[in-house]
Length: 211
Image (tube, rainbow, N blue to C red; front, side):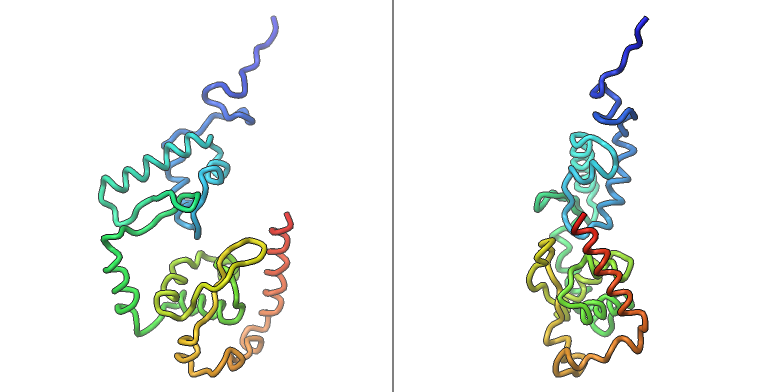
């Protein structure tokens, strides 16, 4: 008696792998976790590959999450923009958020903001991804604060990745009492391993780009 082989596209199995398709309940929290750390809109195809689920299932779960956030009146929303999905604050809260960022914290930056600003100042022009790599954490919130305060600006795109580049502004120099970026104190005496870190970062980025 010959053995029967279940077709690759049989219900309950991924097309190229003999393992069960994740359920929507399993995929939903995974997608939420991925999107929480995403700096830019993420296509459903990329999310599907990350969680090991078919694209139609991921599309279904994303739409369901978006509807849930809308129907429950959450302060954030899940939207499909720019060819991908990302979290966003709701328009009705923009005035509150602008006031909180620009006015409520005008006296001082957080430690995360200061560290992010320092990385941008010394490595500019630099992408968000590169700043995140140096700090080891997602810097989107810190960058938004710096942009809102006029300390940094998006200027140009990376030739290889197309990512927007960040630079400090004249207001940044004014606040620090500097005439130009040449007046920034040398970073090496304060961070002896900075050159090695930069070399390692450049090498790793080239490896990714070339892969």
